[in-house]
Length: 404
Image (cartoon, rainbow, N blue to C red):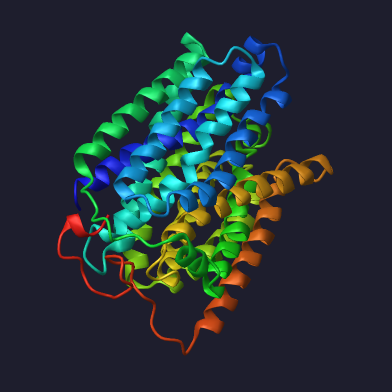
């Protein structure tokens, strides 16, 4: 795998840390800024809204910008957003900083996935994309717990200063390791929009919204389940969340080669397995060792869905995959918000702390139904185009300088 993938993974590590660390810092932020924890929770939503809006908008605006330069600009915006969060004088300014930090998230992963796929030979594209996503999963094992601990001891502002520093390191790595792109290797906005309108791309995005919502219906309330249902103390919340991150990493490692070998079967299999895990979850979590196993499985199988979904929309968008790739991350964040809302509604209705798992199972089955429908509609059509050097042809790029 090219060293350029390391630069993308470092960037993904910083973005993943910034996205998830706020959940652990909400009490500290609320206390420091004189607001309630539920109100501070809007800081999580502000970041997610930034991702949903920024992914298609920034990708569209930068459709003719060379991809290496676009990655650097997006990471610069991410760094500024986190620096603004660290220096925010009040809650409103912090809310704006979180929104600003979220804007480049989806566009970066969208552009980065296309770059990663085009850095390697045909048949290894999914592994390359999964390698980039490893930075996101490792952030949940190392970055988020460490950043939360730092924030609890030195103040939440120190956390965002460190994340901004990671952003600067990421920019240096991108500038040094990612090869330049020729000026004529990029498609215009019109072509990107036409590719996004492809029926298979739209069905892939809809699959992501429903299928991945099942994961976040549970993950959003995993901290409460740890103490209220599993029987662990508050000190065990961070290790349990780290187990979820370990599962995510294992899922990413498995998803790459499986997706390269058989994309749709990997997608069908991971969604089916996720539905089973979510159905079993409410019954298993009352036994401590079984609960820990289920947390790892939820993270692993849940994250196995992301690589085939990413590759599906990129392949179906053919020679203009960047906007579709970025929009996939808007779909994932809609899944995050929708899953969390529906899971919370189930708890508020008095169905119990584990009820989000059954809600999530229903959402995942809906996602599987959409994926299966897309597969049936796609039968008899020409084989999927591989994402290669900007032409839509299924050939291997001659050099790294031709592909970004």
